[in-house]
Length: 316
Image: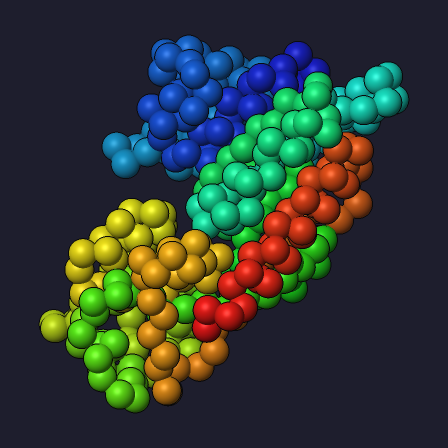
């Protein structure tokens, strides 16, 4: 077993293959051809004198040797990236790279507006932005590929994660919104039974148990005849449908505050709907050294969240 001759790129290729689950998806993410990726994995197995995975029609399955390499490999790559960043800091007094992840809504509402100011504050900064769900971003954070990510931290349980450091952002409610001509707006007091007569769009990143706990009469899971529920990852896709349909969507106020202020969308007041706070936060790994530019990033995101919360407070 020649672990001393194994290269970092072998580990990087293997971990991406584990993350994506197939050679084709991993090769695309690594910008390699499938034969090149296959040769890299084969060379890694030769050097370790161990079979790391079984190739199945549905993808790849790790052997016990592969599980061990995955467990240690993530820590090794994380430490190598941390070493590289700390050496750069000592040599230059600043870091030129910052990797930031976010789920789609905070990416559009909190990250987008601050990029210009951040690059003005740090002219040499290379900013790597990733948009994924919280599970994907957490995996990238733990592997050392992200410095931070922004996502909902209460419903997802991220704020209780012992290995994570969370900077809470100004809380704002999640709202049920619809177009200004929706039939429900002409009624008096509304209940969830009224709302469930229409297509209901719900964010996929909120667990079913959380949604069922807060929304009276909602039953998720297997398809039920007559129930019209739309689960979405990207709210922008659903938002477009709200303007000319009877669909109602649950979404953080930040994602629709401009449309609400312009009168393009309206908030439905539901008497038996519990308040559902959208609690976003900036997530990092505890004990990790961060670049000096990160302080300005955090301050800018916090300020943007505060601004949205203040401007939108009168809309609900």
